[in-house]
Length: 412
Length: 128
Image (cartoon, rainbow over the protein chains, first blue to last red):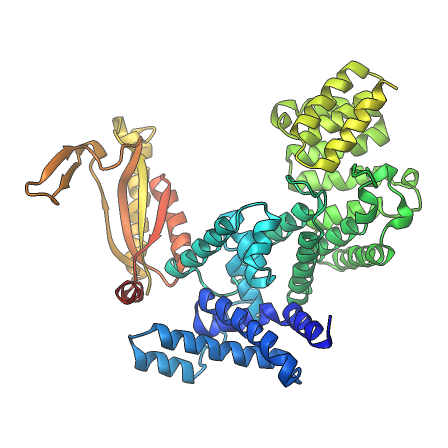
């Protein structure tokens, strides 16, 4: 990579969402904003090698993108010319003081993750407009044809425009529920990257990296929000274990069997610091932790200590109890049962898990957890049947490889 | 200000008490819907509203040929049809969705919120 290439890559990384968000506010049109931003970066690729890197790349990109947007609107409009010209000359679109924070990018976050959009549309828009991923990259990441992904993004932008989805940060009353929707989008992107539900790659680091980057951005915009902090902590504590998570032959390695020496110590340190920050905040009177903070705390316990045997399982059970109080879902109960097995034994855990059978019969992790407990209880035939179901339902190749290995060991 | 159609969906044929569980429930839904309408009117967001007769009473007319062709029944074959609607003006989708939630609670039905085309959309079509 040349210096100019690096400068362009860095500018894209740092400035893309800022440029798109600023244009979206000024022109009130996501389509115009996206295209003008893309054109500005294309112009940078053409011009910077000859003209040199501008002293303020972000400013250069914003100015260039604004010109591109105005050119496009002029080309397109045979109407209302006077009105349009006036709008273009005077940037009177000063942010209205409607939300707690004024940053344009935060408006863009809430618009891309608007609850009136389907989840897959929110994910696609967020990755395109905030993340700056190309449509081809997003399509590849979600294993759909590029035309399908392009159509999804176009439809979402069209709906935002036609239905007048507001470009603003929700009011303080609504921000909590709306933020939950934003965090759900980021967590979905992270999880799809961390343990893909389909396809041949076990881990798609591009998606998990992007989710972490966007969550960092959100944290910089909402530094005092506990759940944003919790989600970031959860992601870095999970991602820190990436290198240990898949064996050289492509099988998943469970937490207890991972080589802790290859964990990313810096990320674990960061995650622990974030969790401590929240514990201190709650002790100082902040509201009680939500689901992401509790899940981050669970992961902090799991990453504390030099061996898996040192895990403070009663603490994990206690954290899951608090999570159950917020979210009494069968999945949370399943995860809690895994910790219960370590504290109260496999029999108690199995009894809890079996009570979830009707709700979770179609979920591979339910059968995988049951299989593991049955194996430990030497109920070999039942374990084998449970592994069969888990392998049948698992979409991820590394998970299937791990389960098959475990099942084969039953006969050994 | 953007304008929205809020349609309420319900079964094609109504049973006793218009598909509310009991007469009391029906009367309560009417009262709640009336109060909601009043609130809409006071806030200046009300444009029009109405309840429709059963969908089975509809007639489809195709006037594109020499002679109009009439078909008994609603345009779409479905178990559920629009049973009533509001036309409202709202600042943006968030406001429309909040009003739809209130309306849905009042009339005890699911509400579809759909934006009207704006003059700008129409101009876009003319320019395309």
